[in-house]
Image (cartoon, rainbow, N blue to C red; front, side, top):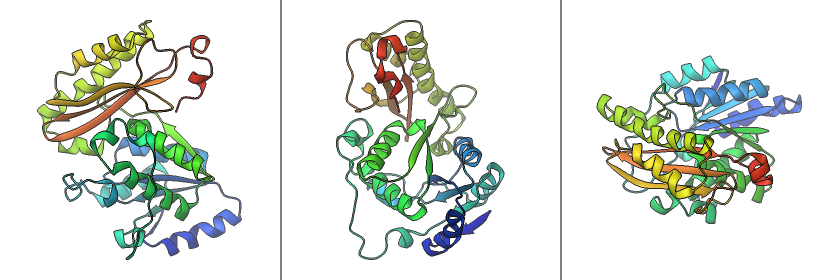
Length: 293
């Protein structure tokens, strides 16, 4: 595995590989990697000839009161996981490499970024879209791999890639969970044993709603109620909503298309997000189901 810190060095490595017709996969991360990231890297390694992993804690997606300075970091562990899961190149740029002096161009993601997390984290998806657009330009991957846990992010990035005609296929990999259902997240490191137990009730609620849906329940209000009833470990729920999986708009009434049930909640001072996709059978959903993110 090669480790590089500059854009010029990364491009120098990738240029001849592309000339040989190698397929390039890309996994952008903010580090403090876990098995969820490992699943993305393994998918890329299985489907591509070259896998680039970036670790960059992107300052433009953090608000002024958020945890940029305290975001967990463990570069040695990250490097070991990348090596074990099949990464070919690890890209470790400094902030000045991505945002040089005088930087002033940003990507505005539009309506998809205005619901759910976009309501509570103004500017967050602007920062995400900008850095991912830059990384796509730098790496020029054939495929890029993202986790479903950050569902709204995946929808924003897919839309951005389409709207800007970026020649990359965005692959969304199912959420990796602990045995008790808790979605793997770098922010889980903030949780002590008792908080972690309470955090697991978020996924328990989502999975209960999914079970009700699989059993035939289609009323939006009942699905949300089933989820909320089990989320007793959260100190506060910022949002728990059903949204159309394509438009991210709030969804009401009988579920007749693919929707996402999404939650953001605080356990202590730690903000956690999670989601499940509810996909009706094809005879009910038609094309809406087949187009889910």
